[in-house]
Each structure stands twice: as structure tokens, then as C-alpha cells.
Image 1 (cartoon, rainbow, N blue to C red):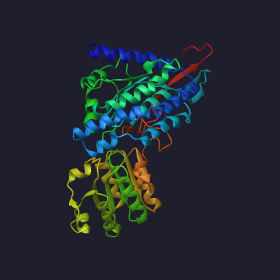
Image 2 (cartoon, rainbow, N blue to C red; image 1 turned 45 degrees about the horizontal axis):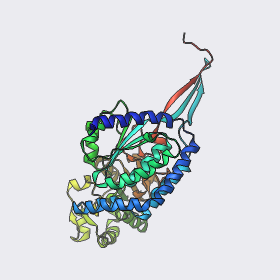
Image 3 (cartoon, rainbow, N blue to C red; image 1 turned 135 degrees about the vertical axis):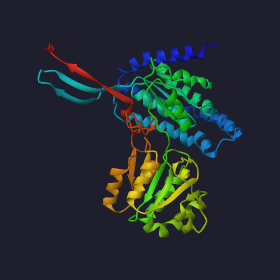
Image 4 (tube, rainbow, N blue to C red; image 1 turned 90 degrees about the horizontal axis):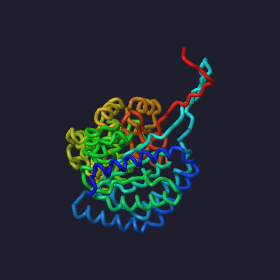
Length: 420
């Protein structure tokens, strides 16, 4: 058996060479390949679904959570969405080679600031097989080589999708090393990848907090990450309560196992008695377990479990919700900035002044007025797809799409200038 370190080093070295060829690939060629990839997913969906059934059966056997299984599960609808996300990329302009800025110096030097690919990107992720297609599409469109390492419980699905998409490259004479997958489930493969800083330019981990912290601790390569998705909806005293009920229910219940689902709901004391009884009943009927502050418990007449401080710092990723009654907009903002994860937070209000204050003061990647946090998503933002949601501030923040997968360089043109 080939030594794992040698094998992965060669993969990364080949990916480095491939990205140099991708950098000059015409936009039209990339779009044609993406269209064929999208068609291939639909054509081979039976193969992909068969592989996915193996993963789901194994997950059930291992007694994994329902939220995990929901993220793992594929269907014809989800494969169609994966295909659609690749097609959406073809409708977006190619960022590579785009001029960001141009200026002329007094000495005649003409300086162009131009977008270029990052290079080789390693993506380490867990349970969602659709990430495989999205990351391949985004990296290919932005002329980056990609090395994928998915979770062991989704390995059959990931490999099936990877093989379908990689096969398209060969038909166009594009280096197959542009798309790579670490198919071994050995955990030490991650440790090896994270030391290959000679060839890999960036690591993006997608998954639980434990995985992300491990990657950050071990990596010799720059990492863009989000640790948690502790998202809030604040129901202001000036809120349209019918609107607030719909937004809060959607943010929590529509798909609770994802990072942009609401984990804490804050309610202004002025509307709490009118809003909470009906809202809590709707949550109960949907199977949501609510953990509330003392005022919430009092209003619910004992039908809500008393929350502890840890509940307001927890990403439940399930039908569990922390609820707190607050005295003011400022208290809500302070709570979000102190207890949240700087991911996505929303205010429901008809007061323009409060809306602006919330937008300005909440320190999160995505801040909403009168909308569900569930929209924090590259596809929903019109970005085609996303490679992750960054809660970092350098160099990308929020949904990472095509533009965030580029860097830039300066192309400087002269006519014989020398520095005196």
C-alpha cells in the first residue's frame, strides 16, 4: 500500500500544476463543462441515490441524530437542486481576470489590480453530500484546484458524485487533477493534508465545531471557517406580530439542522404577553422543545423548560430553541453580540430607526430586517452556490462564492521607467 503521506503529497502537487492550467481556461469552456456536469448529475442520479442509501443505512445503524441524517439524505429533488446550482454558476460572470481597479502614476506606470484564483483549496467537510458538487463547481468556475475530504459516513455518496463530475473533465482535455477527493476514511489523512502548505493555499472546514477547532489547531495552511451558527431573531416592540410569527417559525422549523436556522428567539417585553402564547403553541405543535428565561416560563404558565446560560450559547441543530424576553433593543443587540456566533441575525420591526440601529450595531456576517435567517445561503443570495459561510473577517465574510475564491495581483505596465 502506498504510504498515505506520499499519496496525498502527490495529489496536492498535481493539483498545484493543474491550477496553473485552469488559470488561463476561457470562461466559455468552464461554463460548457459546468453545464455538462449539471446534466451528468441528473443522468447518473440512480447511481448517486444507491450510494446514498448505503450511507443512510450506516448512519441509522450507528444511531446518529435525525438532524445528521437530514443533512446526509439525498433525493431526486436535492440532486436536481445540486444540478441547478451548477447551472446557476454558468449564468454568473467569471471573476478570474476581472479588473478591480486601474490607475496611472505620475511617472507613467499603469497599475492594474486584477482578480486571480487562490490556487489549491482543500475542503474538509462532514455530512452533506451536496457540498461535494457545490465545491467542485465553485472551485472550477473560479479556476482553483480542489482537494475534497468528506466525512466517513457520507463517503459512498461523496465518491459517487465526485466520479460523475470528474469524468466530465477528461472529455475536454482538462487536467483531472483539478478535482481531487481523498477517498480513504482514515482520520490521519486530515492531519497529513493540513501539513501540505508547500502545495495547498487555503483550507476551508465545513462541519461541527470540534472538526473546525481541530483543523485550526493543526493546520500549517491559512484557514477560513465558521465555528457555529447561533442565529437569532429579535421581535421588536414595533414588530408586526403576524409577520414575526411567520419569520420565527420558518427560521426554526423549516430546516432546523442547518447553520442558518434560528437557535435563540428574543422578544421585547412590550409585546411578549401578546406574542409568546400563540408563538409557543405553534412551536409546541411542531415538536419544538423551548427553553426559556424566567419571564418566558411565567408567560407560558409552566409549559416551557427553564433555560440555563449554556442554552443561549448552544447551536442545537435540532428542534430545540432558547427564548429570552428582553427590556430593550440595546439589550437584544448586546445579547446577540455576546452570545451569538456572528453568523446571521434578524430583527422584526416596523420602526426604521430601530432597524437601522440593529443593522449598524449587530456584529454578524449577515444581518436582516423583517426576514428569516434561513436566507443566508449562496444560492439564495444569487451567488450560484457557496463553499461555506465564513464568520471570519479576513479575507471573506458570509457566504463564500466565486469572488471570495479569488485573490488579486497587480499587473504593472511601463515604457522603460526606472526608480531613481
